[in-house]
Length: 107
Image (cartoon, rainbow, N blue to C red; front, side, top):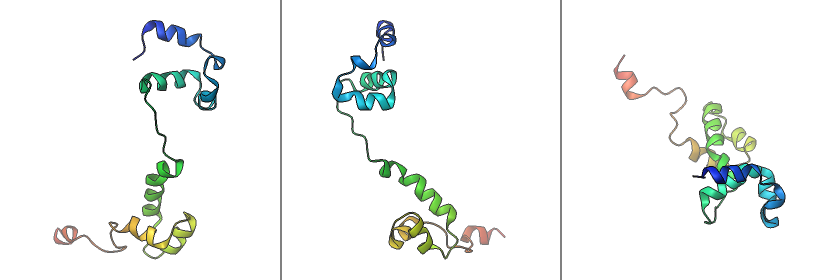
């Protein structure tokens, strides 16, 4: 947590105050966010996963939404993954058109 004095100094901090080796990241984040992330890390190194890794859950949700029971190949091509990967993503998905046992018994 930044102190009142640190927040005041932050307002006076410019990109030129950031060490050159970190400026590319600071330019993406902006100086204020960069300083806040630095405050959070407290000198520890921070690992940023590849964007592909961060986007996997959203991709998998889309695959579940777009699956119609027969389109694994098209989904594999669309998302540039193998049919086996699509099947692994869908392995817990209900079979298209299949009724859940509890749903059936409650009729």
